Amino acid sequence: MTNNITQADNTMNPQGGILLRGADILEIAEASQRFLGRARELHIARHVQTSDEAQGVRFHLRPAAQRELAPACDTLQLCERLGLETQTNADDLEKEILLAMLAGPVTFAYPNYEELAASVRIRRNIVEAARRTALSFHTTKIERPEDCWTYAEHRGFTLLPGKPLVEALRKATQPEVSGQRYAFSCYRASEYVMLLGIAQELARSNPPLLERLQKQWESRAIMSEEFHKVFLQEYGSMDSPLPPGYYVPGDRLWFRNPDNHSSDVTGYEGSWVLYLGGGLFNNFWDCDRPYSMVAKCLEIYHWRHGTYRDAQGELQMDEDVVKERVSITLSDPAEVARVLDLMMRLRDPSGVYAEGGCIDTSRERSRLVCPGTAEIALPDR
Image (cartoon, rainbow, N blue to C red; front, side, top):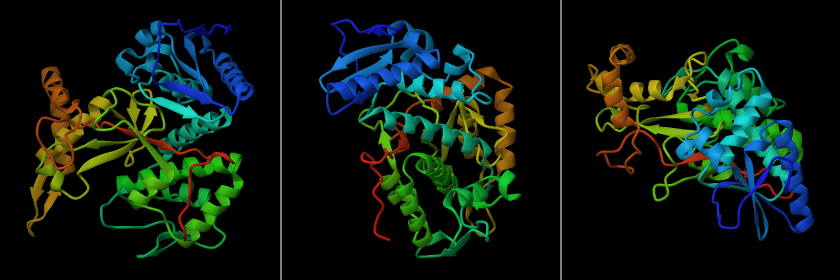
């Protein structure tokens, strides 16, 4: 192949990156050309290398680009290294998404170009929604805009008749739309942002599935483990962990609290966030102050110092103590390095509190959504 895309030599057997498949040679060729065309439009074609496979074409970073842009699959500095302005430029955000996928140690496989394009748009939707999401942290209180939502214990929060899902999700999570903040846990908040990003894409690429999703939420909410199974695909595992610095914008991920005592405080077992790109993770409680990796690690580390028992003997968290401790640590570079050495380790298995840090071994992304290839199977209502 030409057009600034370097062909892999015959000795390479690359793993990871983006794999486009097709029913036959013509479909594979068409999908490949569409991807290469988009890469040229985004001015990233010079970084892309291809490998022909039996049932598709794999795209990944050229070795020199991998070393320069994402050494050891660390994508946290991609924006800085390329001078991207992803906050204000949608094409720059798409560049970061694609380059991070190309740099990855795992394969992002798609049956056609349409699914790849939809996946990128979903990630972009999630990032843009997460940037606007600002909520009130609460582990037991539950509330949503009363003009869109109603609650029943056996159904969760469901839509009122005639209230579109996308509009209702925005009102529940974005104060610029609703004019106020609503109480959420970070886990439920992450579900709403992921669902919003998926629903926005369905409006474009698969309206019949969006209609079924609308009816689902008018009847019963899909939450927690069921939400994960229906809408998301996990990649990476305890047996095959992702590199600690590997993130793709739009990923959902978990930072674990590795401290046995403070993790018993309800809501402080860990922290669910969305990766915004540019080395930043969203802050559900103050969207104008997203977390860097350093800030997130320091906050979670100092949860152990903010834990106390109230008059009833229940474990609670004093956020003011945590903020003060973080501030003190930031003034001492040696202490920052010590804490990061502890926290930047991969987490221990569930139930184990030993030498592990707060970094999870996996990330989560949306399942396929296009007609004919969608993987989202809604349950019986």
